[in-house]
Amino acid sequence: MMKDYENTSDKLSPKVNALLIIDIQEKIIKPIFNNDSIIKNVKKLINAYQILEENIFVSEQNPLKLGATIPELLPKAGYKKIEKMDFSLANIQEFLKELKNKKITNLIVCGIETHICIQQTVLDCLQKGFEVILISDAMSSRNRVDHEIALQRMIQMGAILTTTESIIFELCKTANREEFKEIRKIIMS
Image (cartoon, rainbow, N blue to C red; front, side, top):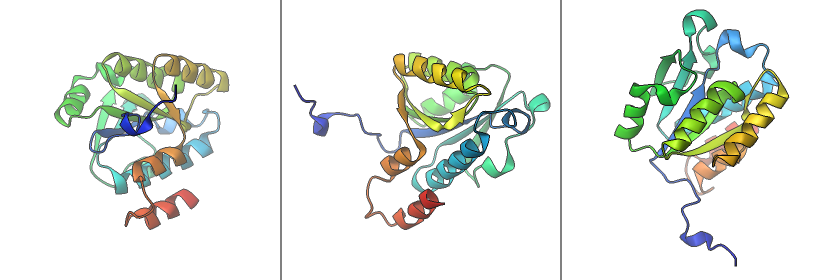
């Protein structure tokens, strides 16, 4: 029997999304597999997200030792920065409280490393009932195999896999939107 997509909630709901930019820090990024592409895609995500949506969270793992977020990957304004020692963002009470207060249910995740902080955050957030969307071409690990196995594990637990371009168009919803011209420029860059 075919699934009736008109009556499902498989599409992202407006006003309940958050973009999580996990640990894209100066001292962690250098050995990351495919790091130039990851940086480029995260930048596109941030630029488009700031036009289309409003909830952005940037985490930094032990910033005293690992440095701050790469400056070009900090949103222009209106984001919440969370410094942490735990690998999972879901262990940070201020983060969970903010999600609850803003009634956020969908988490769009990018960053590094896929098999450590991203995976632990995603598995914990799935357990807490969040819908998690993994932006596969905007996350990575030092080793490709760690990235790929972590993606498989998170998908098996219920995360949704997509790409940078796909999620931007999904958030935009229509070419009739006045912001679409600006979004198109971001995609083509």
